[in-house]
Length: 157
Image (cartoon, rainbow, N blue to C red; front, side, top):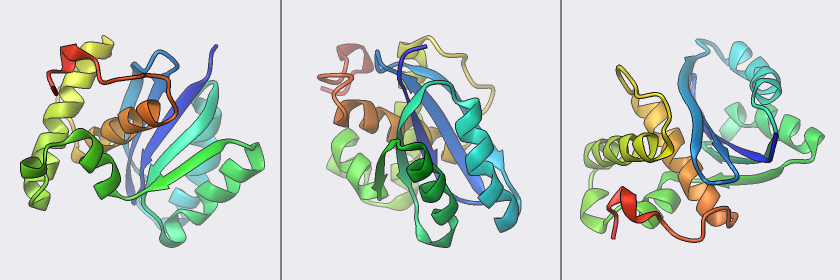
């Protein structure tokens, strides 16, 4: 398998999205780890499950990020820890990110476009943490150069 990028929207309910080197979404999900100890153990198993990961893009920090960062460092992966404003500024219009609820709504819309463009399985429901992980990952594939520009099919021009 070629290189992949894992996107993580960190929290007790964590959004995860895996992207291939072609910039397309492979899979996405939301995982409710329920407690800090379970979240701390999750980094190891999630990184094992996500085949070919060479890059991790994560939104979130604090003590919840420490085990992830330790496991990422142990594996020698490239790592980008960002805040929501970084990917939102790159992917959403200013008017789409003025208020938190608006930004989440527009992230959901963008995530659905990325799912469609990628040919990934359509969601029956899409939790906001998974939608944001998709957006974080899409920012990541642009940032590392796996995509040179936003595909026209996403209608973001």
